[in-house]
Amino acid sequence: MSFALFLVGLLLLVGGIAWGLVTAGVAQVYVGIICVIVLGLGIMGAVSRTRTKDP
Image 1 (cartoon, one colour):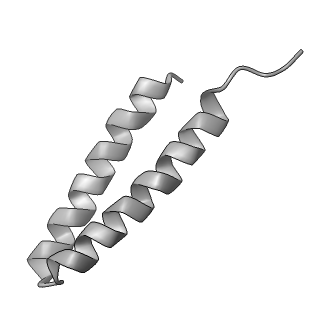
Image 2 (image 1 turned 45 degrees about the vertical axis):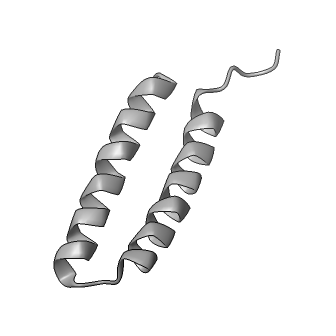
């Protein structure tokens, strides 16, 4: 899978999480913190899965 596809899926996931948290009445500061953490974890996972393997 490509890195761009991972990022598109990650952005959809983060958007859904943010929407759900705002709908549940969570403070915007906490929504931002959670979204940054999920983005960081997602990018690290995407890089580790899509990088080329050393010969």
